[in-house]
Length: 264
Image 1 (tube, helix red, strand yellow):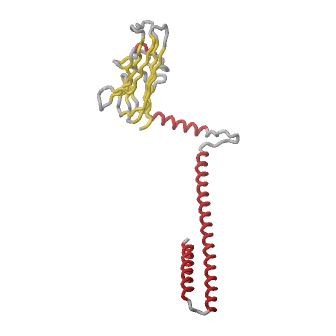
Image 2 (cartoon, helix red, strand yellow; image 1 turned 120 degrees about the vertical axis):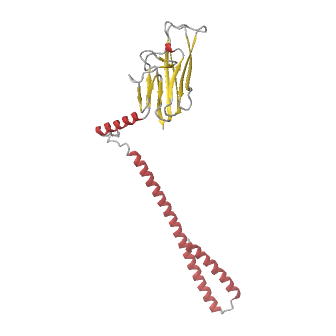
Image 3 (spheres, helix red, strand yellow; image 1 turned 180 degrees about the horizontal axis):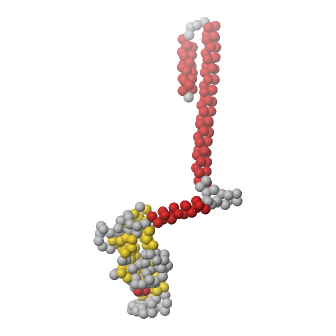
């Protein structure tokens, strides 16, 4: 490009010089014609050089664009090929499975990882479901468990470390024969999940749910569920309070409470 600009500048300077020569030249006719011929020849040569340089610049531009397009195409091929290689397929188009030994090893690693991640699932106890003013839970039998540092004691689920947790609660109430209905014949079922920590020695409500049932029906069952995401400090204690505790079911699939660490 610099050669092209230099050629154009030389042509402009030559044209200016020719105009000045024509205005003040006092040479003979023969010498003038010879000089004019040399000027035309040089001017034509410079024009050809400018044309060649312009074509060369256009060629280099096109070649550069093609090179960029080739590089982009190669990058896309590498990225898509890497994604596809994560799951290969057999001759019938079905995803291939890893060898059995490798699959067992991977499952073991995943299981160990899940056990290390704090999670807890408490279910309905077989006997009395009250411990003071809070509900009592089963932490070891059946579907109940405490992993990753969670501990349960006397109605309190103790958080192992700080982080964002998913906390959930489901309670199912059932009609009992000895139930005494209120005057308006409605039962207001209220459940609450509290948290208490070392920073403040009092219950803070995390979750609550409220529902109403008609009391005098011969048979009825009502399930309430609530859940949410919360930042909890290490050693925080979660516990549950509920109205009409004597109506809560004893079935573990209908009554459960727990938490899972989602983000440390």
